[in-house]
Length: 303
Ligand code: GDP
Image (cartoon, rainbow, N blue to C red):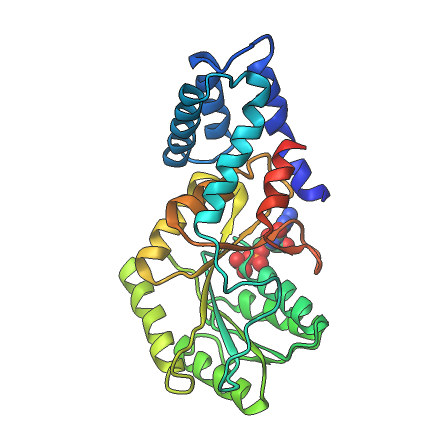
């Protein structure tokens, strides 16, 4: 697909340059590879892990030459991404709960990362698959957030539950799950406020939202999805750290992978935080949200 290929195209170019004129994988090649991975935003920890594994393989299988490097690298990256694959997520098919309750996805992330857009795209795609979706405008701190979600609701015909600006987000969450349950909805997509300046507040707010919605659906939320902007590199890592400390994040959506040459952030974050990447954003349109497919993603690095 175009978005991802563009995103990762420069990767193989750099790789090829690193191995030009080389017959075997030596320290120089590994150093270059390390730099390529780091500049692709794979992150230092994950880069070192990958380099160490390749080093071991090179030492063990003496025959490894530089033309095999991309094959080995591909295998190692696939391995890392598989380590935290969740059997829970099968494409867009949201699990059906045995008691008939709606599957509640609480969406978290800082402002500007593409949270609202991701919710809107997901609502659209789920509805197209025949799912009954309800949106909850839980970011009651920004008028723009509610307005934007309302626009997605209008455009997709997916109902939205909202309250006045400044009202308690937990109260919106309560209304949303109650209404969704009463309507026999399949999925709830609950937006939340993404204010990171005070971690204790964030922690308290998110746990209150959970506690209150659990009065209606005791095992909700079934998924806490963190949205990260893939084009922001180290910021995305930092946000993942903050949010995983504030609440139990169970899946990731990584946006804006269309405009960047740094898709490596997907590999680093999924490895470092051991949370499966569920969706990737590759544009602003309704269809530009893809179910993450690790083989396709890794291929896009090597095309
Ligand atoms: P929020 O503040 O986190 O809710 O962010 P928004 O959903 O309002 O998105 C911020 C901006 O990023 C908007 O202009 C979106 O159209 C844009 N955006 C969101 N996802 C993507 C994506 O995958 N690719 C691109 N190119 N833009 C995106």
